[in-house]
Amino acid sequence: MILTYETTLAQLAKKQPASIYLITGDQPYLTQRLKAAFIEMIPEAERTMNYASYDMETTPLASALDDAMSAPFFGEKRLVFIERAYFLTTETHKGSKVEHDMDGLMSYLTHPEPTSVVVFFANSGKLDSRKKVVKTIKKAAEVISLEAVAEPQIRSLVQQDLKQSGFEMTTSALNLLIQRTGSNLSLIMNELPKLKLASEDTRQIDDQIVGELVTKSLDQNVFDLVNDVMGKRIGAALNLYRQLILTKEEPLKINAVLVSQFRLLIQTKILTKNGYSQGTIASTLKVHPYRVKLALQSIRHLQLQHLRRAYLGLIQIERSLKSTSQDPMMLFELFMLKYLDQVA
Image (cartoon, rainbow, N blue to C red; front, side, top):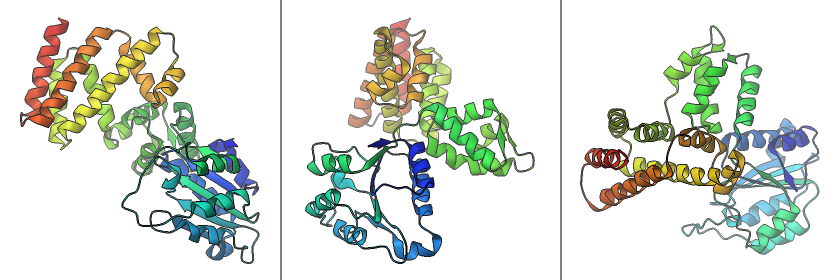
């Protein structure tokens, strides 16, 4: 059965857990919240004996399963976390010398211990649905997929956190926070403590505080850079590119993010022409809905042929960066001049 994050929290709050859970998706903040909710089910006095966490990169799976098959010690439930369960994903760990007992796992999934709650965390990589064990665990477990968090849910989670701690944030400040972090929930939650500290006296977080304390992510800087390129603002584009270089961002990394952004703009432009909605585009391209939202705003007045020319120009920069020792700043300046000449 597939559960949502909210449904799982409600289930755990009622202390009515299933025997097996599988948590997927790279969302550290939500993962930590779920871990805390699972642990909260076990009375504090019993946690030493009835709760354990096993890292599959350093510990054999058999050790975790042995623990799961043991009866709880003076309690009703035993909780076992099986973390970094890479054997369920497409990831390979050739360097790991830990042997994992897949037959034992298959046996446990078929006949789980009713007094144990076993939680598998496969937060990096994608589940490998070709594996028999993955097909089995999907049937046996409650599956919680923590994929890209939609903007409305992010706003709700932020407001919940602020309300619980007695703070308020203006709508424009929250908009700026989401923009500067690229709508990354974990980044947003990491920024909140310092924003609260800076507004301790008033308990009000405004645009000025966010603007002063939250730096733009590379993705957000590149988004601005893309808009400068497409807007033919050569001075602004060159100045921003120079700033990124001065802050020690790797030229190849900057270019890779630029290429990715232009690819998204091209794909969004084509799919929009074919009648796709924002949500459908996000699911089709498997990108965060917020990125699609920004892409839709950017492409309104852009021509597909201009986007393609910029994309091809950046591919050429990538080749030059990998094969020559030419100055990245000079390569980007030549790219801008050539692009402006082509679209004039």
